[in-house]
Image 1 (cartoon, helix red, strand yellow):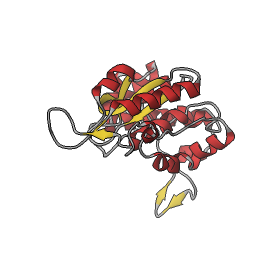
Image 2 (image 1 turned 30 degrees about the horizontal axis):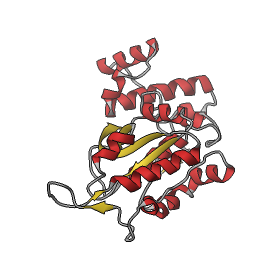
Image 3 (image 1 turned 45 degrees about the horizontal axis):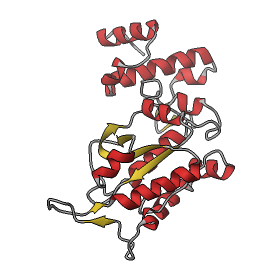
Length: 242
């Protein structure tokens, strides 16, 4: 639900999401909130009570738009409001949302939306980071992309997202492609051996090493095996040479 559906459609019709929509794997609709306003000027905002800068989106067109979405869907989707006040989006949250049969995303604009429509309809608020952008459209597109790639049939193989950064709680291992040597920098020898077990071990260790170096906070909640913990202990003590 947005004031800028064309902006959203431009992104949603491209790349992996666009192909999934064409195949019918994803069913995504953009809804123009302005179409549901009851005033002649198609106005969807008004001055805030109590004064202050900016305008606030009014409750009526948002509420009627959501009611129309529910009727179209034949059910009440989980309504998410993209807001800097919401819980920060994580891979775990995206995995949970990907399991739902339907969700609806409300994109605010101006100074936000009338609190009463949030209280009446919104199930949760989600933020994509501790900063403010002009409207909810870009955050909504980030959320859609993050969720959609975990829907069966969107990517060619589940492994395409299960090995990515954050899915298992770790950052992803480094990637290399041809040529084997570029400007004096060689691809790690292990990747050229064809030994898949050794390669898998190397990748896991590299993911652990990268996470320990760049985002050690993630290790507190990561799913770690006994061998992972031993590797990290060696890394901390300086005994790890990988």
